[in-house]
Image (cartoon, rainbow over all chains, first blue to last red; front, side, top):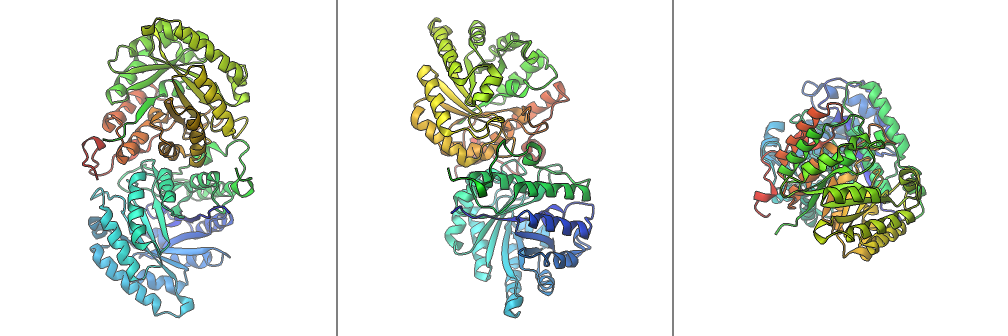
Length: 313
Length: 313
């Protein structure tokens, strides 16, 4: 039995949120349909933030409703606060990705409160979810951004990451995601952070969200795999980026991640050719967006046999 | 004590050999001087092949002679055959990197003989070197290209890599280098190949030469580190590439590799800022060459403290 890996597309949220051109709702839905068709079964489709803050997500409702029509797809959305959670519950989204920064400065800039207050917000969100009928409760995920470095504070102490991971777990998070928001991490740091965290909250599913800003994205994925992590965020064509590093790479490139994992023998459920083909659709819809991706440029190796049909070595 | 890693610049050979514009000898030497000044102490400066085959290396003699004037630098060059070895010995180069392909088809296309005949050539080269006065003998390195995949034959059996590694070792190689010439490797494959090889030839220094054609370059470096490998080839700005994949990435990017290793706490001896600055010199000399590199685009993390001056965690 090959080890199963869960891949989660975050390009529609993390990729589009800093892109100045609005992507049409129909194009977003076509992207979601195509990528789900390639075998990506969990997609963060939008963010429930006020449209005046991020106009890109003005169509959060129709995008969520459209995505929810795709059989087998887990539809998730980012929420910064209780109001976002309320919208998600009303829309019937499957999973809410609450996010807070481990970095005090970054959390102040992002949501204008210290991390401890964000944990308090999270408790209210959990209470709201638990007040719903059982079949109307989305899964609640606690996200720790800047966990591997911050553009304001630099390195973040491992103890801080563990502290907030434990607080979110105790507050009722059903899964956690640890994010290298600005792409500072190296594989040794990844091992240190994940090992320390898993020692405390190892009973919860923990996902890794890496950016490839300094080229270490896939190496960091391997370090997390070594720790037993089997859920990874990535974005098609590496969409996303960092407002502090114009022109820099964004999230780990989904196609390259899928190729590496498939080549290593993991079960991703993804059809690599179909996945690469989704790029065309995005490129046509957003001709001005920068697309990364080594596999798309180089193609699959000669005679490449996907893991699903390969004989064990 | 931090683990020491030896980094070897191969851009002047592997990077330039497929580039159609001749890089002026003075520009090559300026590059070598600058990169040695940044802390890269071993540089493959050229290839001893007939200029009518690769005009880029028409200045192999003055480049070698100039590089040999740089104190502390190990000057190496690629050789495809005995004639190349003769030229290297006459020039007084420090190390000769003999290269043969593990893939039969690739070796036929490259040097028009099967791998077994290349091993025979290698024996003659070793004999020639041993016939020289002791202080005029270059170090002889045996290189196995296409060891992790071939554009003609696809995957290469681990047993084939081990077979030729043993033959080169028995023939007198003082070190070996294993190359993923076309960027097919994944970290599990790297572990399998290096473990099997080291079990047979582990008494020799073994280096890894990875290409980043499909984005897995740094992940493969980490897999080789896990196996105990401490010598890596890379090229500034990832120069190089693959004639079969136009526009694809080339060698592992030296700056990104150095950043990752330094961040992980390894002792590379490299000054990252000085290394990144060498790019300007190459870009001015060859304005038409495609340059890769995430660190150069994104910059060092906020408050980054180099390993050399960092307190142990």
